[in-house]
Length: 498
Image 1 (tube, rainbow, N blue to C red):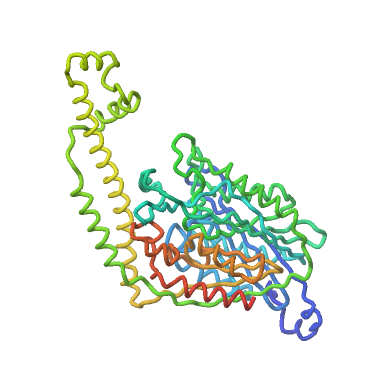
Image 2: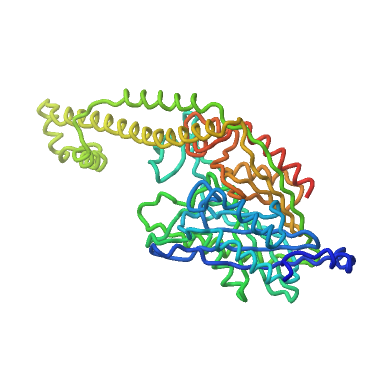
């Protein structure tokens, strides 16, 4: 039985003209990967898109998972094993296999290999000639940058792991990226076959039921697929979402619900898709290069800096007669009636007429106690932020030491389909990295996908990596600040070749 997704040597010799005028072909398939041993709100999927243009075949696989290795249920050998099977059974070169994690925190099956490879095989069996087109959508209502620039020149971040920095300390936030990168693939009769869409947002909003969910991007894909109909697939490629949260991520007054945000994303993608004109001379090109990036060498210094700040904060705590039970009613009382908090105004006037200061002195004492209590709370909140990020630094210091070499190898993939250009990275790129690449890119429809072909944690900008205040993105990181310059240079070179 002939292998799928290849042209045999005999066919190449007998029909060389057909290869020269090769028509772009594509096939799609998806498989449900939801763990149903837990309560389920909506399904998780692995989806495959196989593209072929003459002698070049590539596979784009998207997985509703937190990461390709390191975190969650996908094992570290998943990428290598899937590639080996696809090369053996379908003759797809390992370098041409691109696997992206949506970064949703849903729970998938226990063995991703067993479901992923069959999905790619099905996609190969379903291949048809296609026309391709690229475009860009816009959605700025569903995301926010979680990096907070503080008065003291440092940066903090917004996480559920700890409290947000005090409002009065925040002076600015980082940018977001509203671009929706779009690749549209239509059958020759004009019927949509697949949509690849790229966007930057952490899909970690969850749903009111707290059931298993593919989150924002799962709902967006469903909205696109339901609208297109006829079995068309929407494949989501996570962008530079390292510092991009769902909007109002810390809202405690309303149930956290990913579906409205996902619907907005899906509808905005559909609006832009309708404007894309596809053509039959799409073409396909893949460049896969390995880049050695420097591991961080300043972990010990940064750990010591956090520990010194923890000591300073502990020593700053001051005693007060208040506890939580007494502080809350006092705080309400003194903010409800700032001039006469302890009693009605006539009692204060009586004291004044008698030359007494009983209530005034009581108010001064209570206010001083409340100020000390609030300062203690802010110090304790900062201690929780430092403790969480200290744990990340210690973990990555141990990983870098265990690696036994000063660099870490990463794959950087460049993919071009028609006018759609994509570059990838295996870590959580922060948004400014992607914005810079797109600004410099020679092709107008150039987009960036993180979380692809492995996982190396966060990759903040060189400036963010030097943050003296400590935030997750710059602590949950294996890399030295110099990584960004090397990556940018590699990406720019690949984009020129594409």
